[in-house]
Image (tube, rainbow, N blue to C red; front, side):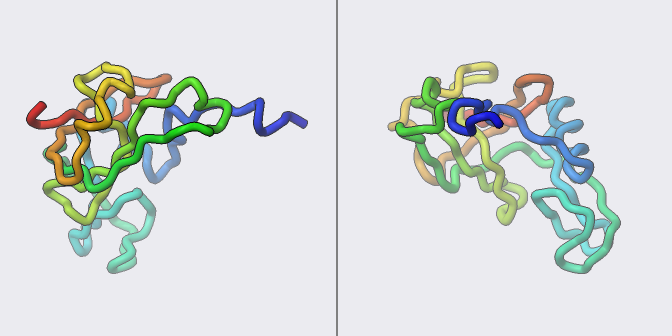
Length: 151
């Protein structure tokens, strides 16, 4: 049996399931879309088969502007899991979408598309700072990252 402390692989890319697959397919096209119930119109994230508001199984994917604001953030500090030990200095942010304030996505703030996860200095992050989604391919999956609207 493998040792969990030495056999870890960083979670750099998402695990794609059937409900969330369209989210990642749209991301690969450079679009941020959120699952929407066609019966009651409510947005839902994370994606799931049934609407928690009206219990309908019918949904579509609504295109979002990609704009939002930083709702919260953290900079992980050592001690980290062994697989992350060489990665300190990066941020993890929660973004509240401008066109869907009840929807919040987790990601990273970077200086520009393709920049390293530690490209933004910690003192640049502020709760409420306006951000815009950018998309980056990581290990075969295109993921949303975020840049400041006013660097």
